[in-house]
Image (cartoon, rainbow over all chains, first blue to last red; front, side, top):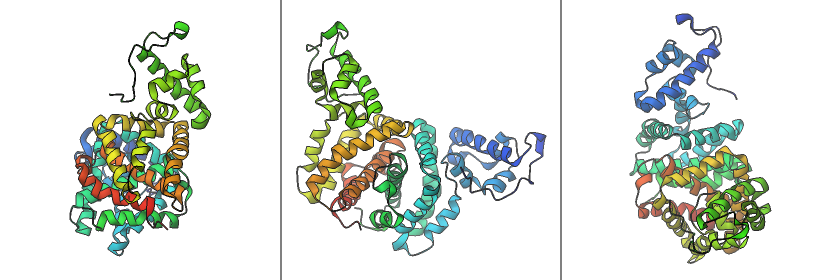
Length: 208
Length: 208
């Protein structure tokens, strides 16, 4: 599976403590440490410093290889090979009344190329481990939600965000995990026309 | 967990072959056999007769204990303690323009009392075993979908049904598995107002 978040080359190997001999080793160690620390301490409690310490590397390596805590979380726990902050910037860049459409296009743009495996893995880890669900919840609330709420300034922002999450989760389940046709293979324009208005209603429409 | 589909008492024990000594044993044997046979042969290929034979009981026991193949499937594979045909009857009983609301009320009515465990178990088995996803797909297409399609007579019926499935799956994920608040604890009227119009649009609105 492509990683998509690796901005560097293998020349920047951390020599600290001599425990890691290559960049891929560092990345793998950080991912493993991140999974442990996020589950142990929750999203907020897990600091970049504590994850790096667990992996035995310098904290700067997190920014170097992943771009920050959010992206490391996305890769390690959500199995999403994207920079979450850059993704949110793309979602918010445009008219508010088209945010539903941008969400559908970006969701399909991220997941279609890598297929259903990583999405199913994410869902499986959420359903199997209560702590992962806790961490995922904290992440959605404290990262994604906080930025969407601030931007849209709609009433009942928290409810809207969870409604949005429900349709996005379900879209991923049907398209990538259970693969119900014709939605699983529908082209992006069909999916946009079908689902974007529903997402838009959740975010900016009358929901009460 | 309550079963909810058991219409009989322990007096009707099958004595055939002398292998099963109690009604609960027969039920458990049928559930185990059903899981195996549905996964091996798919939803259509798995006959009541073949499941009963695997369990070593008479085929009439399936109707006696579960009410038929659909209900046995729902209980054994989906972990849903309801009679699917009775559920579909309830969904279709009323004005077409309120079917979205009836779906939300029935969904919450079934799952809220038993909590998230069985829903998470269903999602986990779907994500872990490709065959379960295949069986689930066939069941949705050939049982639920066929009846909804026949009833609603809308264009693009298959796409509408899979869109419906996406929102229902997602509602279950957020309310029972990842438990994002406030949707996870919202009262049924709040959920109806928020989600029913979106389901209704998928089933009878303009989606293209």
